[in-house]
Image 1 (cartoon, helix red, strand yellow):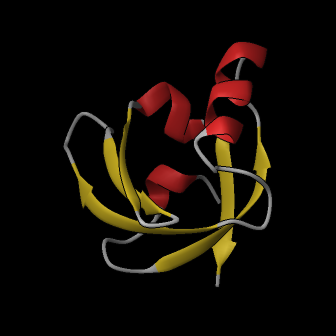
Image 2 (cartoon, helix red, strand yellow; image 1 turned 60 degrees about the vertical axis):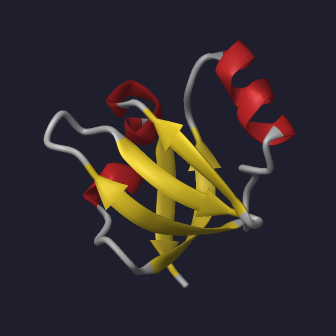
Image 3 (tube, helix red, strand yellow; image 1 turned 90 degrees about the vertical axis):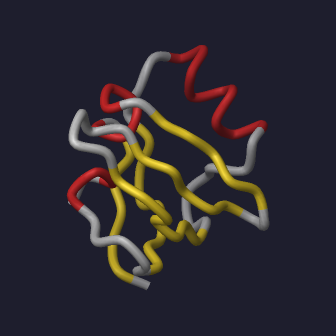
Amino acid sequence: MRLNEGIIGKVYKVTDVNVDEQITRRLEALGVNEQTSITILNKKGSGSLIIKVRGTRLALGRKISDGIMVKEA
Protein backbone atom coordinates (compact mmCIF):
# COMPACT_ATOMS: atom_id res chain seq x y z
CA MET A 1 0.00 0.00 0.00
CA ARG A 2 1.15 3.56 -0.63
CA LEU A 3 2.04 5.81 2.29
CA ASN A 4 -0.63 8.38 1.45
CA GLU A 5 -3.30 5.65 1.74
CA GLY A 6 -2.44 5.20 5.42
CA ILE A 7 -4.50 6.26 8.43
CA ILE A 8 -3.52 9.07 10.80
CA GLY A 9 -1.96 7.78 14.02
CA LYS A 10 -1.00 4.32 12.72
CA VAL A 11 2.55 3.02 12.49
CA TYR A 12 3.82 1.58 9.21
CA LYS A 13 7.04 -0.06 8.01
CA VAL A 14 8.62 1.03 4.73
CA THR A 15 8.84 -1.84 2.24
CA ASP A 16 10.07 0.05 -0.84
CA VAL A 17 10.89 3.57 -2.05
CA ASN A 18 10.08 4.23 -5.74
CA VAL A 19 10.89 7.88 -6.46
CA ASP A 20 13.59 9.74 -8.41
CA GLU A 21 17.19 8.84 -7.54
CA GLN A 22 17.94 12.24 -5.97
CA ILE A 23 14.81 12.13 -3.82
CA THR A 24 15.57 8.54 -2.77
CA ARG A 25 19.04 9.56 -1.59
CA ARG A 26 17.63 12.54 0.31
CA LEU A 27 14.98 10.39 1.98
CA GLU A 28 17.66 7.87 2.98
CA ALA A 29 19.71 10.69 4.50
CA LEU A 30 16.64 11.71 6.51
CA GLY A 31 16.15 8.13 7.72
CA VAL A 32 13.41 6.88 5.40
CA ASN A 33 14.85 3.48 4.44
CA GLU A 34 13.38 0.00 4.03
CA GLN A 35 12.14 -1.45 7.35
CA THR A 36 11.98 2.03 8.96
CA SER A 37 8.94 2.72 11.14
CA ILE A 38 6.81 5.71 10.10
CA THR A 39 3.89 7.27 11.96
CA ILE A 40 1.40 9.41 10.03
CA LEU A 41 0.72 12.56 12.04
CA ASN A 42 -1.46 14.54 9.63
CA LYS A 43 -2.91 14.36 6.12
CA LYS A 44 -4.00 17.20 3.87
CA GLY A 45 -6.64 17.04 1.16
CA SER A 46 -4.04 17.67 -1.53
CA GLY A 47 -2.27 14.40 -0.66
CA SER A 48 0.57 15.88 1.35
CA LEU A 49 1.49 14.24 4.65
CA ILE A 50 3.29 15.01 7.88
CA ILE A 51 5.08 11.93 9.19
CA LYS A 52 7.29 11.08 12.15
CA VAL A 53 10.48 9.17 11.38
CA ARG A 54 13.08 8.41 14.04
CA GLY A 55 11.88 11.28 16.24
CA THR A 56 11.80 13.84 13.41
CA ARG A 57 8.71 15.28 11.72
CA LEU A 58 8.81 15.47 7.93
CA ALA A 59 6.38 16.95 5.41
CA LEU A 60 6.03 15.04 2.14
CA GLY A 61 4.20 16.02 -1.01
CA ARG A 62 1.82 13.71 -2.84
CA LYS A 63 4.36 12.72 -5.52
CA ILE A 64 6.83 11.51 -2.90
CA SER A 65 4.26 9.85 -0.63
CA ASP A 66 2.86 7.97 -3.67
CA GLY A 67 6.31 6.43 -4.21
CA ILE A 68 6.78 5.12 -0.67
CA MET A 69 5.32 1.65 -0.19
CA VAL A 70 4.45 0.56 3.35
CA LYS A 71 2.82 -2.19 5.38
CA GLU A 72 1.24 -2.06 8.84
CA ALA A 73 3.73 -2.58 11.65
